[in-house]
Image (cartoon, rainbow, N blue to C red; front, side, top):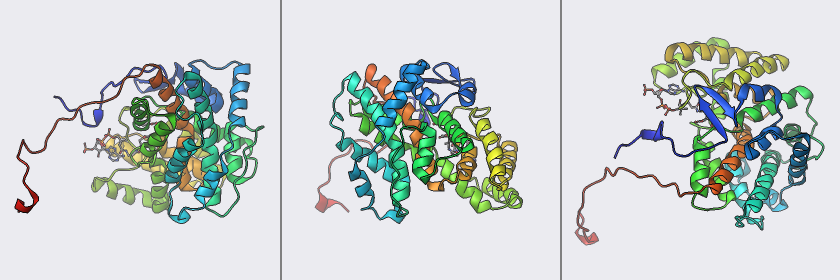
Length: 372
Ligand SMILES: CC(=O)SCCNC(=O)CCNC(=O)[C@H](O)C(C)(C)COP(=O)(O)OP(=O)(O)OC[C@H]1O[C@@H](n2cnc3c(N)ncnc32)[C@H](O)[C@@H]1OP(=O)(O)O
Ligand SMILES: O=C([O-])CC(=O)C(=O)O
């Protein structure tokens, strides 16, 4: 048996959804740079689920379906009110709420292609409502009902704040959603596929994926980046802070990647947005600190920033609470998880690798009274 730690380089499935080849990311053949500059998140959802960009009619139909399914059962909001609210991380609340949502879907265990597509729509539509409702309930505010006339990006910001966002905020948020939508066989997507490959249901797959995304080595890194920037506080503090961390062999959040070696192609878009938004809100130090960190980490460790690094200051400038950064990642990545779940169901085989055993050799059972 050959053990590949962390499954590095192991090709575990075929997929026609997204690819990373020579540090270039494409969704169904479209370069991420093109999509980031031009596409709406709804177009990307359609692309990931149908492997083609939508016509105007197809896009309108998807938007209509998402808008019509955005409301969540009141039981979920009542459930939030039972939590020790100031101690619950929004990713834990989201994980629980998606599992709970499955209890209210009569088709949860109906496994036809049509039923699975309807559930995909419902999950994509309701997850933003769950995230924003929790964000408000924990502050003692009423949830804001979704609006049918707003884009997916604008509606999220509207449900979060109760105010219609301006074009700059909507455009930035839409771009962030596009950039986070899918990423080949990352840890949370793999988790979703492993889960549904047992022929478990879609709610279980998405709940499992949320659990995997939550960790700071994966989606949780964006919140950790903001924590680091806040701790550093000033541009002058960057150098001693980062050098100390590197000397102690601590990881710098938002840097490094399992697949990209030369750099994450998504990072430059977020960097540009971070520069623009930090200036616009009068807090340029977040961008200045970030570029200084990048300078040191890339020269000392040759580790380029990943998607999580500049997204932190972008979301901060949009006025979003720091512990909502990873749930926002989940809002977007749900589209990719669902595409992969549907693809897994279409050509399923149980995913079950082996482990090389390293424990003790064969031995006889010792009755409890005879154990020393
Ligand atoms: C959306 C996403 O999930 S993007 C990734 C988000 N995660 C982060 O930003 C957390 C910080 N980064 C990391 O922990 C890693 O780079 C990962 C988890 C992303 C990739 O991990 P792996 O491919 O397993 O690399 P691994 O952790 O083995 O690191 C290899 C070497 O680079 C170092 N290294 C990797 N990332 C970092 C980092 N961010 N800061 C400092 N050193 C690092 C490791 O310490 C290790 O050094 P060593 O060989 O001297 O022991
Ligand atoms: O692909 C990965 O390992 C992590 C990542 O960048 C993502 O999920 O977007």
